[in-house]
Amino acid sequence: MWLTGFDSLMPEGRKTPWKYLPHLGTHLSVTFGEPIPPHTIRAALQRESIPDSHPAEKVQSWVSKTGTVPTLSAQVRDAQAEEESRRIRSMVTDVIQREVEALGTRVSQMMLDKP
Image 1: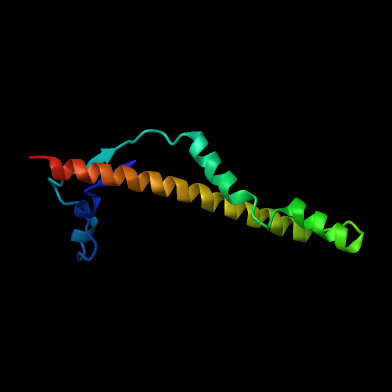
Image 2: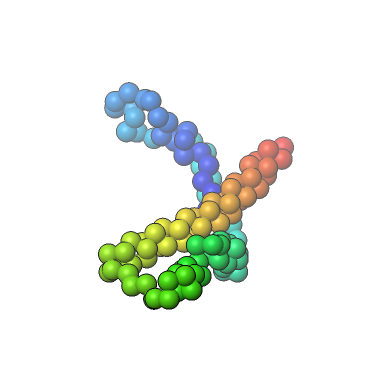
């Protein structure tokens, strides 16, 4: 979704009481783009998910070096799960941001092309 004109509707820096009142007659636009295909998000996640920080590879490396299987405390596991969750949210947010920027570029170009 791409929104235009809202910066003119309630511009920053106006003094009270005007900052609480919208500018009448402001042209607003709301444009909905195509849904983001799930394969786009999956591809981004797959591209980022196997670097040298892959947990299975770390465990295998540890076992081959020490001959023992590492055990993790619940706190460490929770921290790792939280970090992984943050990383995944960040990757999905990047995909969405790129798609929204592309939609904004298309909307801006259409507005510039109007006679």
